[in-house]
Image (cartoon, rainbow, N blue to C red):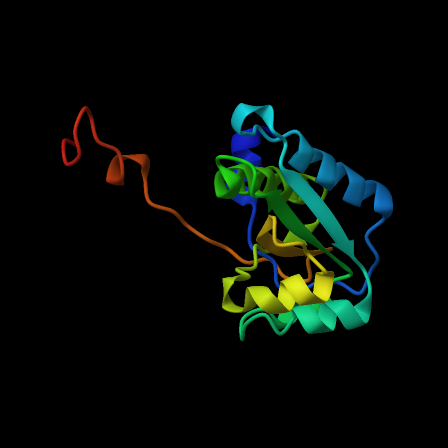
Length: 165
């Protein structure tokens, strides 16, 4: 499958089969994050792999929309060192690489916004203050197949100046 097809077919998955995800796949996913570009090649990202049911249960309380974390076989918390001049961008690029790798491996995931209760995540995972928490992504074999659509290129593209279709 070419990259554009992978991008277009990736979906946010919130229901997972009751099936373990092997460590070798998790390592490939993290490797995809490590290979993301970063500002000044500072490589600020670090990763916490979570398999423990009790920890996933705690993280599922981040927001009313994050309950599905508890049911995923594994989750990864992505951190970005605040020493980076582009801490959020560097972390976000790593996450996108990871989400695409997850999909290419036949797995599913969903980006979870941790800002609703960042303290819960920080305390539960013992994250130092010098790290920005980018997200927690639950990972598993998809138990759903959602569909989606997007705007056309012509609907959101301008030439030379905004508004010039």
